[in-house]
Image 1 (cartoon, rainbow, N blue to C red):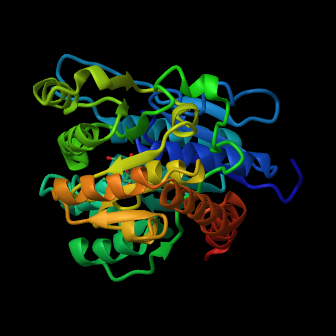
Image 2 (cartoon, rainbow, N blue to C red):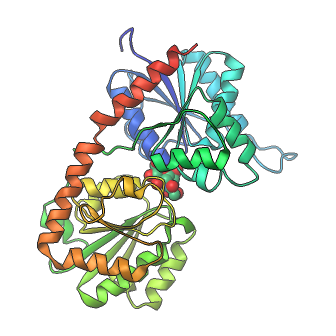
Image 3 (tube, rainbow, N blue to C red):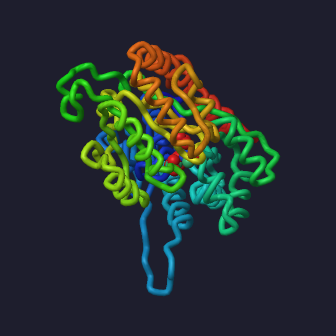
Length: 380
Ligand code: GMT
């Protein structure tokens, strides 16, 4: 580390969700660029395992929990603010990057008020604005956290616009797209790897999510049932969440359970994306769709709903197809159009990778965050 190196704390959700993945991938890139990065979370972030520690970091600080009989609920915002305060004071943190407004932007603003020592930059990821944050339970605190952050970014133009509309805030929100490491997310050409999941004549469809209602995972199964009634195919479902049992039951009901594998949640999704032929993302809303971008980097075309920020990532007719939310037949038609023609499949797969490299590469996106850090730290 040099005298110019920044001291950054990163506060994020630590499970398999996209916001924690972006926070971790970004923190690792920032640390690689020679800056001091301290992750703060209730557990080791999902994709940080194996990458933290050592003299040069990045470092991880666990938010301490406290249970007391009087408390009917835990206080995640208070415990996160408390641990963050310790990290800010101990390591002279110049800027706290809060990923996801709830409760992290609030906790970061709280720690800034206690220490008078750090700037707060908040990155909005999607459901913190479109779903949870808009709930009456959180609306005032989320608006306050967004208004009081020193700098705010959103992962798509859609999300920036939505934030202004939902919360009636009138402040600058910088749009910085998510990125994908195209050296890691690549096509895997070894036939032996693919042979573990599909026969050579079968198309391999894939879905990655946290299986929340917004992901419409039952549509994934319905689309697959149509596709596999017309061509030999298999479906890989990666992730876990409340809708998984319904998706499982539906796969059984539609007679495709033998060709569907529920693989659960794991960090190195590139090992599956790299052998897949088509990514399905039928969400009712999606601020960006990071999982789709990671698939694109692996030369996998995407069939998605035309919702939220997805059109900023997927180019209709070029890197995949978009249809109306819930239009399972149109999605199945689009999937078959890609999978039935080697030519269409290859053209779209290559265009998808090209888009990942030319529009969403870390070398384009990470400097934008670094510039925002420097400007925010210099603010008066
Ligand atoms: O998709 C989720 O429900 C998880 C959520 C999160 O914050 O962990 O993902 C959101 O953030 C991702 C990273 O920026 C985006 O790629 C996802 O589109 C966004 N999800 C939604 O808007 C539903």
